[in-house]
Amino acid sequence: MRTNWREIRWKSTAANYLTVFRLLLVPLFAWLFLTEHYVLQLIATFLFIIAAITDAIDGHLARKRNEVTQFGAFLDPFADKLLTLTAFVLIALRKEFSLLLVNMVVYISLIAAREIGITMLRIWAIDRGQPLVTSLWGKMKTGIQLTTLIGTLLYFNLRDWMRAHGIKIAYLDDQTVVPVLHFLIVICVIVTIISGWLYLRNLSFRKKQ
Image 1 (spheres, helix red, strand yellow):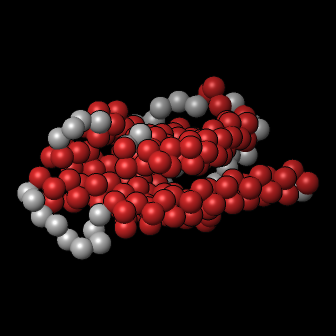
Image 2 (tube, helix red, strand yellow):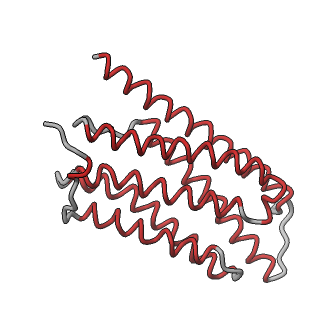
Image 3 (cartoon, helix red, strand yellow):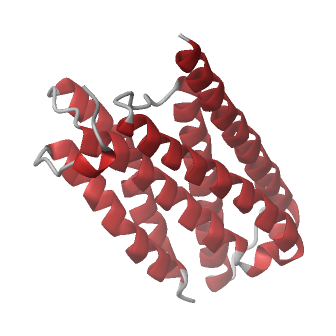
């Protein structure tokens, strides 16, 4: 039976509530991140980590309780994309990445193109009654993105706290760490593009069958 994406309806399940909770955390995380106070930015990182944890829990919870829904299958990946894209944009706007701004714009554009494209593909697949299942590469992509973003946020938190308290540690500075973060973001882009290509390849294979 074909299921039109417009017919997807909210279902009251624990997993869906966690997904909506993650969506609500995104604007709060962004607002706190943009403040100038390192304590509020630390809270922003804490909220981001909570959101990342709910990403790991909600899908497992839905499968364990046999509460997998079309609503959750669409909204859960959408919430992940919104969370990670918001974090990437906010990090790119920081002065530490000002010299890499052009690079960051290209990276975020590639990631956004993949994420928006896969979201549209999910809508199309649901409309055909063949919803996409998150692949191993898709899960790996999300894991690498979240790990990189959390590491970046924690570095800024630690560095700002150290500056506020007059503490200096050798090699724990922007000159040393930012290039490493830049490299990790490049890895994120590569894995994101590969996972998107594999979705398209697998979909093409399914159509031939």
